[in-house]
Image 1 (tube, each protein chain N blue to C red):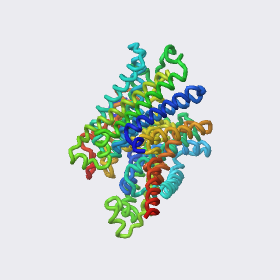
Image 2: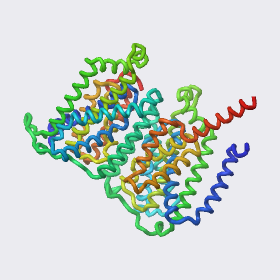
Image 3: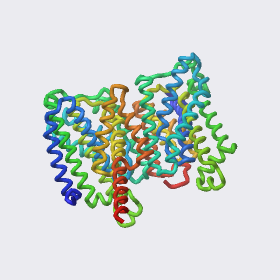
Length: 321
Length: 287
């Protein structure tokens, strides 16, 4: 059993599970593949959000990084003729990450609520700038990628690409949790002043974590632009992206590997089931999730399971006594 | 627009911003919660005003008392069902909860009224009066006066009435207030009611001069938060000053920048204040 609890064990079991899932999902219908692609994108954003979430900072503005990733991809694709997927992903991610490092430096010194609202404002400002700088972004009417090399590919190709990205992200997150940096981030979450006192360079770790988080979000944004082939400020800076990341991580459990995955699958399934009844139902689902989670299970589903497990263990022990 | 006329317009807009921001400071001061649901609440109030005034064929100004009562009632419900269980929880918990509430309200507004832009047209919408050689919109003047009047009434409530004094006591020292026998539930629910009532009024006023759409809420939320931080979070005096600064700067900047960029002015102030003097213009405590 210990093997499965170690980092190596988690890696191996995850690799195995993914391979099985990969084989099964190759036969899915295009509708299901489309839904799964969206779900994976959101899981990816939530997982990326979770990197900075590990420090206990709540960002309400991850749509900014998502949108920057999308726009960089489209601009690179159209203006500079870069059609290589890997290069597009990496450059878009890097620009997003760099942006996050620059704005993160002043922002991350702020206490929780200020940081949360600061990032909310950031997303709004980037959105406004995207509308205002018409010659780069084509303003509110958006830009589209000519339907040529990417769209002709089947939904399955997109699905496999995003599956790969999210899989790498999850591996990265497991590595992060067990690294020196992960421990530093958790210490910052538990008590920032104490972390500072024992010599943790809190600003450095927070800024780097924010950068990684934005890099990963930017990569997903880049994928989105290539997948949908049309972006405008309203969709790529939409609050449902920022909110989705928050709600999914909170629902599952902030700072856990499984949290965003569970949260993403459940919340998006609920939205999908009720989609025909209301416009933009996902916002309602995210909002309601945030309310209910804060009232009844602030540590998320994983927190509830942990509590039950602990209680079960305690009962077991008392029986043995 | 000339510079003097844009300053005056900004001043009038500042009055309305002060009204939005005041609802935030009440809840923050007394209950230590940042109400991120305020924007969607204002938009909801605006849409209700729009529907009622076109249905009843009356001037939106007559709806002010009704909206105040309606939203105060909503505030009491929100307090007892949502906020009471988390009153003493960490601030991030209430922040996330209220953010969630905001998006639930925004989505309901969207589903009831649809995504279209709405504006209220009254008989005096296009009238303007000339003051010291500057022509200003009659509507803006009226909405400014309503905002100013509401602000004054709130200041009187806070300073002269027993309930207001109890609210201030809670703001100064929660434990102390509890010890001297202030019923916290009563004060908290009244504070929420008062602040939601202000959003009701703000909704009427704003829907008369700004085109409303369901997703406009987050900008209102952000602006009132920026104004609060600029004035010093929790400081009642700072609000009118900060609102006027933001209003005038927005108005002047829209003279030589693309109009949409003016929405970012408040945020620029937020960043500057947080970098230079995080306690704001009139704030005492270091955050």
